[in-house]
Length: 197
Length: 416
Image 1 (tube, rainbow over the protein chains, first blue to last red):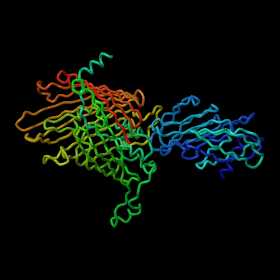
Image 2: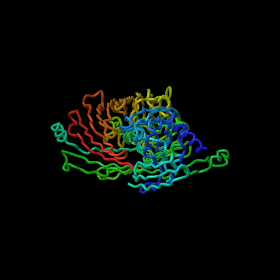
Image 3: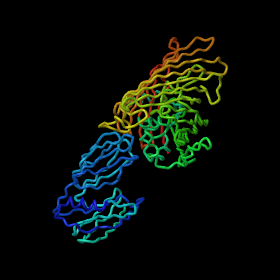
């Protein structure tokens, strides 16, 4: 069901003239991390195409003293809604210039505050000045062909238009080499990553 | 400036003898996997949320504790056993990991008049702290404290077991809150003067008081501010009472605005937030009626009345307390005493806090023979990490008689 929805969304975003292509799958091996989760694998750029942000905002929840999700990749121009699901006051701010060093103040349980991330390439850390242990990242990308790795390192980017691309990886602490992939019109291409300090 | 510092140092600094009872509990950090500053302005001083956590019986507000704790407790009986009671023990649970913490205190003292000018009293004190909850409605807090006092080792082991009926009603047994000042949760190395002020037979608020206490708290209108109260009966002096009379005490406070006394987020919308901000005004009143005994002297009946105020505004806090004591010892003239302090602190950075306190006390307000004592205490607190604290502090006496007692010290604290 989720897969159907994703494809429908992609169709909506890319317009009727876009041919849904193949998938990119693979595994991330994180050396020096507790597990291989929360790496963002993304196509760096698809030339000659402009990708509009989704109409509906993305959401980061503040629940049980954690930002959920910990890493949120978005298309530039996407609005992110920050929800407080706890019965304690939270805050969201970022020290990063690319996100205008915003500070959304504090708000009660069940309410949200929003910010629109306009700057392509921005990696902004989200912090709570009431709970210094809370941390999340918003990664602002050019196109919607991205995935976040699971704990076991697996990832899947679906419905990528056929073509040759540079596939990159971002992790909050580890670094990895970009790889070139050629996505077929149908079927799957595999790209594995090893990331380390 | 240099001259001022040299003059202060030359005035002669001696070691201050204090009994800091820390209440920072890293065990709670582990239980909820959160930073010390979730609850502490600068450990052990509590912020608004830390007070709400305490007022909920060391639980997260609004019944959220089961969701917020990151470690599962060990069951001492399944939930369904409640239906079987009284033919079974009421079910409960205990913390999933050992609820122990360590609080270390070391001091560097300087005494210009002493033979040994510099002293490295590291460690000065070691505390093994424990605290947590037992099931839905019991909680506990205690410590084993080992302290150096002029190369003699002192040991204390206060604890309290608490029945938490609701945030509005707790029953506490053991070490209770007879001291109306926040001296056990203070920012400074020096205790508050009202906590250290002694009656003629040696009683003082600062010493641990053992007994029974009813206390509680509730939010004010629209979930903001609110009230606290506590009333108790205690031995007065020591674990084994040294006289047949019991002492009584009470304190009530009301907080205007700021985080609710028992937490929650209603009405908490703001453009500014920081763990050390809780814009509010709290006023309180307290009393203590007791009997103090001393070997070779008749018993002293004394009464303490007082009030305090606590104002928080963004990075600034101003507070103060005033205490009046009347003392009666048969065959001696009655004594009336007055003491107060005023304090301001300012957060330059979340890790750098400046503080200045003025304190004044007059042991006998009706006799000019006893001169009032007054002092000013400027200091700086540096939070090197959320659990590592350095305190640099002067105590400069302003009255002639005590000028030679000026003190300077550096205190290092850490919690694990």
